[in-house]
Image (cartoon, rainbow, N blue to C red):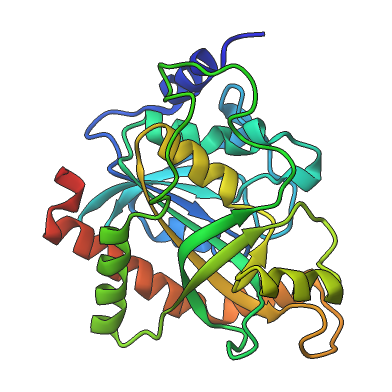
Length: 280
């Protein structure tokens, strides 16, 4: 099999366009992919046309890589992602994030729809990810390491860049957008957690749970990019309200708060540009 490094470079070369390379990579979760359509001068490439790129088959994940500008930042956005529960390895799930960094993105903004473990947070709450807990049972860096991509044992002390979390909170405050902050835990899915699992996750300190994000963050950090993570709390997890859970609830809530979420992303991109963080 072709080495991971070579596959990443081949995928990046296939989609790299003229002009300035992207400064920011956007990974857009369930119901949030429409933000990519707002990019100025957009150029979209279906995942199916990108060598080695995994295909997304989940409702709410369009499966396109979109280039364009927003808030003065040159961006490349993933409209949808693949997940471990679709049968992929963590290495495969995280491959697109590697391509974003290979294309030039120094900052990765990763978003997701998540179940709320904090009973004080209602559906529609936006949560800035302070840290994460990985319970996926597979790791994106498992197997031989290629030093061209990153070190064998990367430090994850600051998986979510503290200075960029401050920037995101400042941007939210300026826009009058409430922004919670907490810990995200990744579970393998595709079942939603049981009430007993929810109680366990609350006990270990998690505020939100989902089925993505962590492998992408791990490889972005492995390759030296800085990360901002934001969850949209689309429902309260099992056992908190007693209600049954469904993917329709996830996408409906994500759609309801889409305008607010997009306004927050706009504010963050603008502040990244004006603060000089993209020149770092």
